[in-house]
Image (cartoon, rainbow, N blue to C red):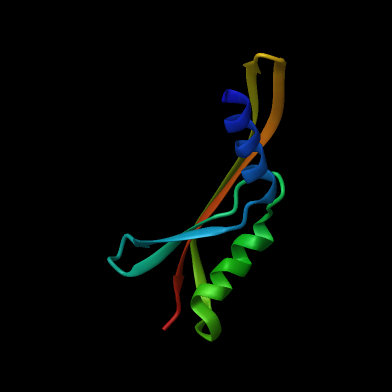
Length: 95
């Protein structure tokens, strides 16, 4: 069972897509937290998602953060390792 969960987690990291959730900015306006973490994703996918959300109005990036780390896990068949890439940004659509 652990191997299935581990395999599904790896697949999500490799084949995921940028996701967005609605939030409120420090000035009380509506914004979006966009996450494009994973080894198969990149910052371009975050910007593409922001463009999809805001359309022709455009958007302003309010905050951007990213880091890279390592992941190690053990299982019945040995030790597995990999890297993690965390990327997220907060945007608000222009009026």
